[in-house]
Image (tube, rainbow, N blue to C red; front, side, top):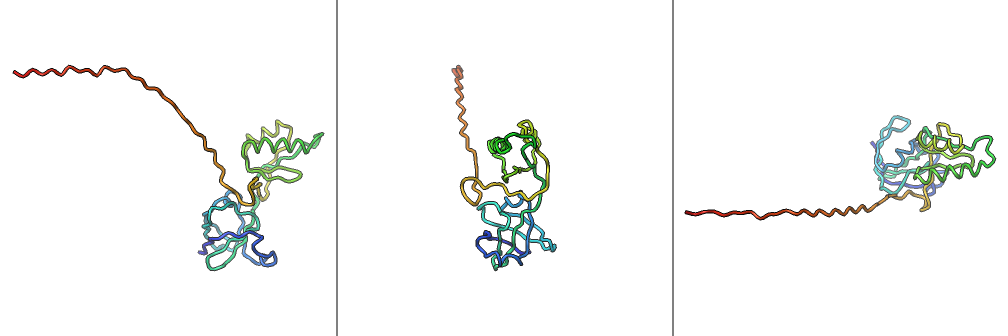
Amino acid sequence: MQLYIQRLTKNDIPADQTGDLPTLALPFDTRQKSRFRATLNNGEAVGVDLPRTGVLRDGDIIETADGAKLKIIASPQEVMQVTASKDSQQPQFDLMRGAYHLGNRHVPLMLTPEALYFEPDHVLGQMLEQLGLTVQVVSAPFEPETGAYGQHSHGHSHNHSHSHSHDHSHSHNHAHNHSHSHD
């Protein structure tokens, strides 16, 4: 089994040199992982053990220690497509409002001029429908935005300090009478 250990971007190799590379089609959930096993279209099993430096994007190249390369393809997967209602008087604003509400919930979101896409969550779908947007489940490659910090994903954590002060004042009388009589 080939083990792919290095990530290259599509910009690291001229496009005319990537056309004949074997491909590996992966959904977004797998492309977020740095370690996984997969099977190529030809049935060959491969392992991936990459540094934790971000999400594999459509067109990225991964490489073995001996230089064998593999091109990553974003495979179609089930996603929710959000569009403005056909009768909307302000479709761009409606989509912008939907993007705001999804972003406020830190939902990975793919943006196009006509639609928003996110991984299936029917509660969020209902919220968007209540805002007047049209939501449907479709199959499409999912390439969410990387955020404001650049090309590769950066860890996003929410550290909250929780201080709990508990005053435990216990009034006990610990005076014991230990008189021993020695006769």
